[in-house]
Length: 417
Image 1 (spheres, rainbow, N blue to C red):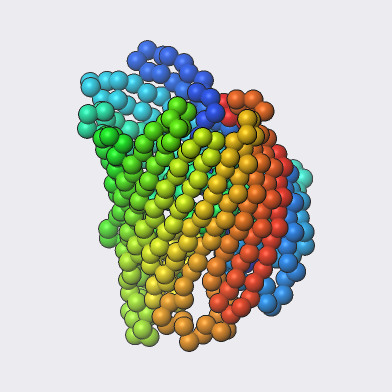
Image 2 (image 1 turned 90 degrees about the vertical axis):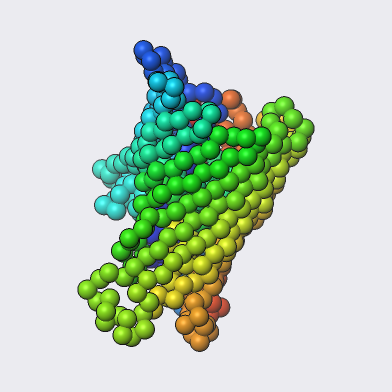
């Protein structure tokens, strides 16, 4: 049985997937004033993982490389399966949309839920992850307002442009698979997540657009009180069309900011021993994507303090509430040869020690860096089916010199409709 740190299990358990990138238009039905669309995907992969043996020098708190026996699994990749329902209408000079997305997995679920560690045993069954529930209204002249639960602004483009979106990337808990793998989550970007939100997006002006949203504030260890919302802001510039122009691409930048407070019964006592009663986390990310001929390149990075790593506000502070800095990014290149796309990608996510932790650097097994390299082959068997082969080399390093490595290979495919 493969053994992982508590955070690694929690990270793979929390993975929620991105909206559908459809290969075809979906199934449309007209019903009165409404146009109804059904779309989704089904995917499956055989994944083999080779892990380091568990030992004192392979323990990395927050590391995303496995330790333990080798494992084999038939599982979902970075995307779970999906059935997305949407309905659109034009009413009283408003464009209206409602979307409900259901994300089942092919692997059986345990008590922790569909995104918790899986339960590969007899008589078990999978679950359904309802992560998209929102409506929008607006007009091309002034923009769009979104209300409900959907993907965030910060980190969204990082995962949507990750080539492992159609594959597996770093496996994550392969001996007991959950709904999804990790891809580059925590190994090149902080996961964008699905969050309750009220977001405004501008119209597009000569390629420029922006979004700003009020989001449900999130908890972290020791801090679960909020008197203000989480704020996310993003802007982008897009030029050209990769289907018709020799050169096209986009650039973007996003920010997430949130204040967290300790409002527990022990808060006053904690303050006496020097624990911070509140902190503010802020992270900035940005990237550029270029399409020229059959080549596509992506360069992405993020930096900030008090937001943590892998997911928003995971490992964001020391035990006394001193904020940790985190940064990282990835570089990726793909090239199309007819129906075959070849891809290479390298990324890392780093977590710095808080100021009050630096004296313990040589004995602290807290994560210093998660990194991975990915070689991918993606073959368009039809306009709906893509066959995938990937090789992934993942490494986790701690501040005290501990490290663990994981080597994965994945073979399978994904169908969009």
